[in-house]
Length: 236
Image (cartoon, rainbow, N blue to C red; front, top):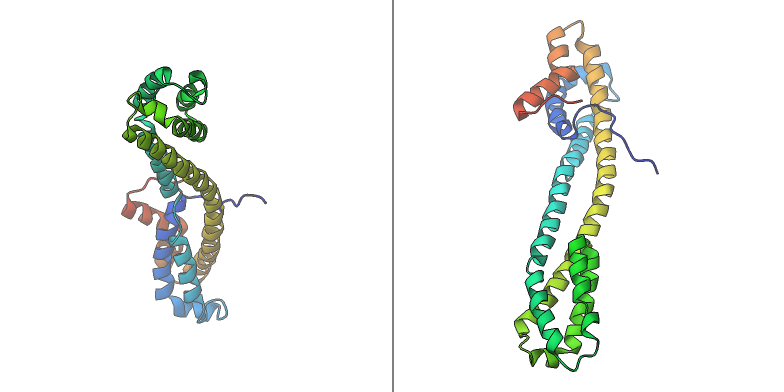
């Protein structure tokens, strides 16, 4: 299915404040609009406009979605920050512990270091899971060499946190793509109604009240007001 594209040429975040501003004008002038087009501007018009506006306003913006993704990424980095020291200490004990169920070189420490260096957090979680399994299987021998319970808990907690956060990150990336498509469909639905209002407003007032046609139903003028009020820059 093709990705929805915007039917407007200004920034997405400007649409809702623009729609609110236009809503106030068409509400003020609704009697004129209804007289012009009774079916289109009858009793259901304002509720329909309000529903489309509410749907657009309720959407999570792409900037919020990006911020959520950045928060997850930062949490993953923070979680793995303690890993190098834990691995260094574990490696020293693995070298001296006996008997082990696997050779010291196959314990998994090297693989965890490589995964962390690569920045592949999903791979890191998988390699860390193997390391924790080897640690559990050889716990008595390692404890005999001074491996503390707190270090085991720290590695197990880190692996669980990484598993949770990498899953959340995958879901967040996927939902962000869906959200973008859903957002655009909803925003376009609102703008389609706004376009009709703008065109009908000009038909109503272009000759009888030029100031109203310009100030209330001309897109460029409404955008200027929105950008002034919100401190924005000019759009596309």
